[in-house]
Length: 79
Image (cartoon, rainbow, N blue to C red; front, side, top):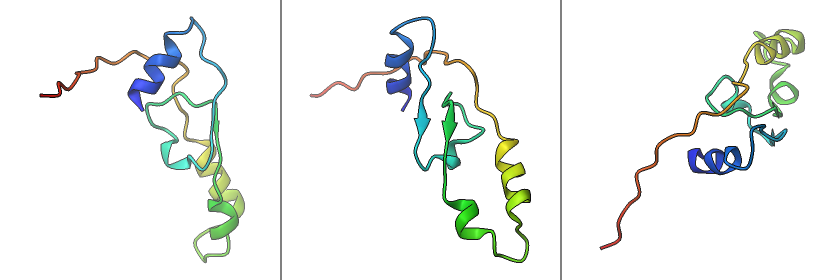
């Protein structure tokens, strides 16, 4: 994933608006997705500890960074 973001960032000073399908597990992580979606609220809102509002507020509180810092990649040599 780092290699992909390095390639995207190399194309210009601004990152494109990228949406991650079913990517809520990446929320709050290092990858600067503009948006993500999930079926978590639809599937789990009926559990006793969950309400749709509480679950939505939890997910909305997680933010991703607005930019990408290129990582150094170590290339594997085929012998």
